Each structure stands twice: as structure tokens, then as C-alpha cells.
Amino acid sequence: MIADVAFDVPVPHPFSYRVPPGWVLAPGQRVLAPLRGAKRVGLVLALRDGGGADLKPLLQIVDASPVLSAAQLELVRWIARESLSSVGSTCAALLPPPLPDAVRRGWRGERPPRTAGGRDPRQDPRMASGRWGGRGAARLELLIGAGREERLLETIGTAGADALVLTHDVETAARWAARLGALGGVVRLDSGAREGERARGWAALARGAARLAVGTRSALLAPLPSPAIVAVVDEHDAAHKPPGAPRIHSRDVVLERAARDGCRAIFTTATPSVEMWWRAESGRVALVAGPSGPWPTVTIADTRGILRREAATPALVRAIRETLAAGQRALLVLSRFASSLACDECGAVVRCERCAIALSWSRARGTLDCRVCGGSAPAAETCRQCHGRRLSPFGWGAERVEHEVRRRFPQARVARYDPEATRGARGTAQRTAADVAEIVIGTRGALRLFGPAALGLAAFVSPDQLLRLPDFRATERAFALMWAAAERVRPDGRLIVQSQTPAHYAFAALTEQSLPLFYKHELKFRAELGYPPFRRLAIVTVRAAKGGDTPRVAEAVAAALRGSARLTVYPPAPDRRDRLRRVVVKGDGELPSLLATALEGLPASPSRSRGIIDVEVDPVEWPF
Ligand SMILES: [Zn+2]
Ligand SMILES: [Zn+2]
Image (cartoon, rainbow, N blue to C red):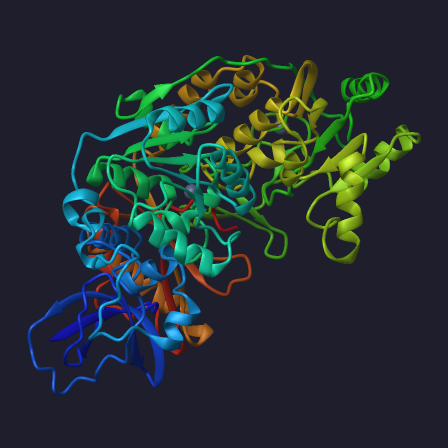
């Protein structure tokens, strides 16, 4: 017998080994095998007849039984194709690490291990393709509005089905593990659990000994029998697509899993991704709105011409004073500096005429560059809208806002909560201070300090910085953040947004607590400019082994991509430090396979000495 084994290496094809005589082995089982002079754990993809006399033998069986069924392996292949990752890297990211013990000791192939019940695990009906792979009518639901997470919990409780809850971070996974724990035994498959615990939890799900699971994206393939509930909490969060292979959003995998195995997929979010809203609007996902819930009074404070002198408008100062007097807490949210230019007088942003996203300003080169089409222009002198002569990358930093707040409210307990302030040795003290401060000044991460309706006041000092990020998702993300802040304010509290563009539709939708209003405008913009969900995007990053060769290699890559008539290929553009080139590509639903075909024959990533050609499909955060 010959086994085809995939390893966690960026090589698209599997490696072949001889199976020692007498071994009982199945696809989906992990083995130890020699690879480039080292012993590596790999996953058996297929077994075929043949002597394989010229092949190296496998060394050890790692898993007592397959960790992936045939149907799951098919899903893995789909994920690898969609994300242009290797099957081996995909498996490594989406499986719990094998028990260290099992790797050291190995299973003797000739004596298949037995489960507690004495059955051969390979005969387990729940692992047979007929069960996990059984196709049913998929139910897809999008839960929005107040109490969405409580409604999900209730659904899981009453459905009596097996359930998997996927979260974007370990903190949220822990919260869900506690909630589901009330319904019965729950296994944790995220890195918040010890490694052995994850491997044992996975096995318990496979044999039906556990019925509820929580995890981050590494739990996407958790073996639950159909019909199960697979839920994605905070569907819109970019953290559902972490860096590292396979670069794909958990939402997309769950949608595919539901289509294949008929599981009931439930997505919860306050502000769906534009792609998800569009699916709901076109009837492919059922929108379950729930009540709209209490909402604070929203004030949009116009800062045109005044923000340069003071970080806080009179409206904000008054609101802080009233909040402190009422014994409530205030949060002032700051944003990272935008690398774009805007007019101080009228707030207009310098945008690319073709792509409509903010142009990225390079102080060093004195140029404005488009991060989509690669177009470049000398920095403008005057505002195109009002002919004002002050264009700047202006914004407020945490330190300056803290100084101003302390000066105005010397009696108040003020604490900063941003990556800079909470780092290092001082960080712990800073976090403790923020827990009890009356006024917290922080970045988006500070929202986690506050539960629903915990704040008397939330304020965005200059969210224009967010709207001006050179990313077509800038508005979607800014809107999601402001909405999340509003949910943390008491119904009798206030949300204040200071802006140079107070008439922006994102602010109108926030004020009216209206998701449809926001998505109507956002979808129109996306449709007109050919952004997702209407077209798919990819970023191809090129860096040659010798820096000087990068422009030439990037041109070769772009030329290869242009060979496909169904791809829109923009000229290669340098990053800010001019160390690599990025080629932005637009295409239809078949984008991954079109990219794979077009790039075939070009040197792939594995050999770093030969440089890097890296493809990210459906990027969620634009590299600046
Ligand atoms: Zn202007
Ligand atoms: Zn452009």
C-alpha cells in the first residue's frame, strides 16, 4: 500500500510513502513520516495499491482513528482551493494538535486501538460519510437586534441538536463555554483549553460522548453529526479571518459546510458584514431581526473649522460634565491616524477618482497613492470641493485628548486604554485603573471594558479618521464600531459623534438606529465601484529574493494574471516602504481558481530564497 500524506508546508501536492505491512490505516488519520530529514506529523489523504519499494516507509500512526471523515476531507480540499492554501497547512490549522503522548509513542498499526465500548473506531457510524456527509436542506439564519445571543442560546437549548459555537477570540469562547455549560457537557476546542483537552474533546464529539462544543476558527471542522447547529458569533468581525493559512473567513466555511452536510447555520451580529446583509436581502439567508432594543440619544457634532483647536466640542464637554454629575461612566473613543488627507474647512477627503477610496498619503514621497488601482498623484494643494487651502492628515492622539480632559475635569478619575498605554509592565496597572475610571480614553479595544448599557456616555472624538482609511471597508468598520458603542450606552445616556462630515449616511443610520438605511447606501457604493459582494477581490504580494528584482517579477506576475480575460488586474503598486509590490485583482465568484490557473508555472512561495508570491483572496483588512 502507498499512502499520500499532506504536511503543514506550503506545497500543493501530497507526499507518497510506503505503508509498512500489517498496518491498518485509513484516510483522515495522522501519521509520523520522514520529510526533508525530519520526522513530521502529516495527514493521510488517500491510500492506494502498490508496492512502493522505492518509497520511504511511514514511521508511526499518531491518531488511533481518523480525525477527519471522507466528507470532512472534501471540505478541507474546498477550503484549500478557495484560499489558495495547501491541504496540509489547512489541516494543521483546523485540527487540534495530536496528543504529545501519541506522537511520542505512536499506535501500533497492527493492533487497532479500541474505544471504551470495544468497537473499532473506524466503524463508528457517526464518522461514516453517510452521517456527517448526509445532505439535508441547509437552514441559514442571521440573528440581529437585541438579545440575539440569548436567542441563540435558547435555540440550542430547545433544538436538542448537537451544537458548535464559533467565536472570534478566546475571551468570547470562554464566555460561551460557560453559557453552554448550563445546558450540559461542553468541550472547548480553542487555545483557551489545554492541548490534550482539545484532542480529547474532538474525539469525544466524534464518538458522540459530547454534544456541545465551543471554539475559534480551529474548531471549524469539529465532528458533529448532522443535523447539528453551527453558530458563528459576531459574524462581521475581521478576527474570524486570522492571519496564517488557510486565509478564509469562518462565515464562508460554515456556509459551505451547511451546503454540504445540511447543518443549521446561525450567525449572530449587531452589524452584519455587507456580504451577509446582501445574502439576507436576496433571500438566501433568513433574517431574524428580534426587537430593536433601547437606544441612546445620538448627537452628531459638527467640527468643521473648529476641531483643530480643541479635541472636545462644547456638546461633548457638556455631556461629560452631566455624565459625571449623574455618577455614570464615560468612554471617549479615538481612532488610529489615517494616512489620508482631508480638508480642514469642509471635511472633504482626497479620494481616487476611479476607485472612490481615500488616497494614501506618503509624507516621505509627497505623493497620494491609491491602494486599489495603484494610481499615484502629487499631494494636492487645495480642496477640490471648497478650494480651502488646508489639507492635512489631521487627527487626535490619545495623549493630547487625555491632557485636555484632565485639564477640564481635574477631579475626575481618568484612565487611558489603548495599545500603547496597556502594554508592558505598566499595562496591568493601567487596565486596573481603566476598570474603575470615570472617564476612559481608548481605542476600539476599550469597548470590551463595558457590558450592555454600562455607559452614561460614549463619544467618538474624530471618527472621520476611520472613514478616511484607504480601504473600501472603512465605512462598514466605522459603522460597526459606533453601533457597538451605542449598545453599551444606557437608554437614557448619550452617544456623541464629532465629525467634519456630519451628513454622512453612517451617522444618519446610527442616529435612527436603522441597519437598512446604512446597507442601502453601502450596497449602492459597492455595486457602483465593483466591490464585494458584487465582485471578489484578491491581493497578490510580490517580493523578489533580491529587492532590485521586485518590480520586474511583479510585472511578470501581473502579466500572467492579465492572461485571464475574467480578471481585472491593476498595475503593481509599491507598499509604503517600497519593499514589495501589491497587485490588486478583481474577479467573479470563480476568483480563486482563476488565480490558481493564471499563476500556475510561476515560482510559488515555498522557496523564500527565491522571493515570495503571496495571494490573499477576499481580504478583510487592507494593508496600508
Ligand atoms: Zn474643503
Ligand atoms: Zn484608484
